[in-house]
Length: 265
Figure (cartoon, rainbow, N blue to C red):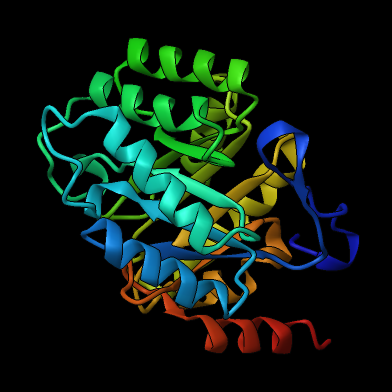
């Protein structure tokens, strides 16, 4: 059923103002999890030297992201990151606590507003927001992203289990229907069979949807999905940066080598 030899061409990843990340292999993304502006600048500079395809600023790790945070503080920090890694596209994520983020006391509307401010400033190439967020907050951020010409990545995370292939396919389709430009689904396996379930659903969704997607099986069991997922249609894979931002991430150079080895027939 999952015959990679008949797979369609990989979909490109859209960026701000109509840019694209193309290429046959997966886009390798390195997370930035610094707590301060200075540490984020140093982290971005160091990771950029390893040439990941994409950087992700996990804003929820930043200690400036607290209840009542001013958007200009985040915009200023995003500018520091861009200056430290000027040739690396930047995905900006302010992850909700319920989906694995650091608790900064922010509700969905506040998170959407902060992400929107960074998008309007032209400092984010992609913005990530959870599909299960408050519908009004999601609609507001979607409108901002359309005006700012910044692609919106909608994501869903399940740190407890791996639903059925049909349920996963329905989740991908639901995020597409919400107006996403990219969709991401990350689930936790309890067995090797769960990893296969995730890869099968990714393969099916890649053929059903017109937009690029990401399917990740987390933790040590899910490592094959990070290395081989591109052969099933998953377009972005995350490595660990200075620190990991999710369970199961591999160091950048190791992940790059394993992905290259996976291309060998």
